[in-house]
Length: 192
Image: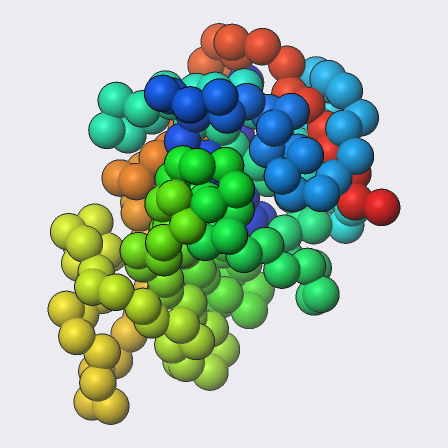
């Protein structure tokens, strides 16, 4: 496998105990299924183009669950808005969104299950602004330095490593995939 994570956005979709697979994720996102692609090619295309998404087969991850990961710059594009809550309802499972871009210090994570928003956090380090905050931080988020309560006197400072730590606790840190045996090829989705 080939890892990813820096200057990237990705979804983690819980795949065990449901009929979630890469094809269904691509369809639910409204993308065209371009078929399978080798890992290196798929990750490179997803990272270097604005209209492709690389989707993994189900991978073992946090909480002893399987996770389908979908990554690509398409998820960071202005005008592209994936509603994690709606997607979790359509797929009938837990869906998470992560984004990190160290140039602008943009860091986000969102978690929803079966159509209900559980947690959302967004931060822009250039301005020090918390752009979204819904729900209470869990232990992984507290370990990343988030306060229990956000108020006017609270200073928040998170970075890329914190996004990856939360991803690792909730589903999978995608930077850890490099060199592990692949359970199958990636699928590539394309925006129209």
